[in-house]
Amino acid sequence: MLPGAAWSNAAEARRWLKTERARLNWSLKDVERAFSKVAYASDLFTGPGGGDLFPRATAKRVERFEAGGEIIPDWLYWVPLAAMRSAIEPDDVWEWDRIHIPGHRGVREEAQEAELDARTFELNDDQIGLLKAYAALNQRQAAVIRALAENPAALDAMIEKVVRGSTGNIVPQ
Image (cartoon, rainbow, N blue to C red; front, top):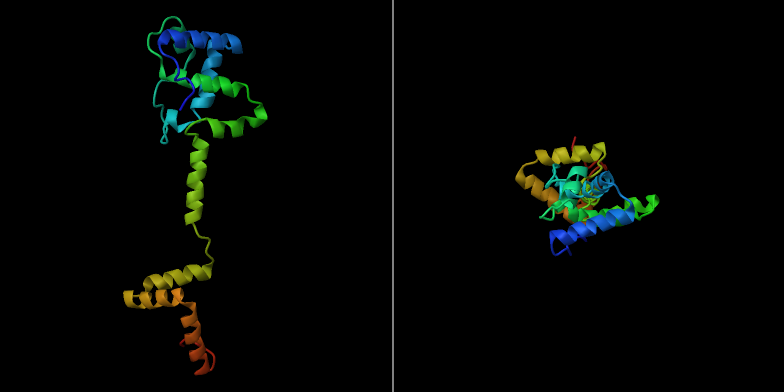
């Protein structure tokens, strides 16, 4: 999922990190900043409820790993993505992040908002009143109203029959 998984051992990962830092002219602090920009945008790092799921890249952790770390730290798998992101033009970063950062929080949040919007109705006062009146009906009455709502032709025929037999007022007084 993340582009850094190709290292076969810690020594290879250390060499890659040192080479990449030199190529990008990054300080230890730059690695920390670049990691944060990528990892904190993803639910894979922070989790959907917040809180780090594994230790983050700090200047001290980067320095310790480069000095001879024997285990590839979880944060290192985000650094290749951060290096790719550093080459993106500032105007294009927002879109690039959403496409390339796995588990991007903004994409998840927009999907949740879209789902909520799809389930939310904008009702006027008359419609709200009708729903309240429907909620007050007994089960039998509600079944009749539901059947009429599902068959508008039958409802129109009933209205026409009532109108022909009355003065035009179909609402009982």
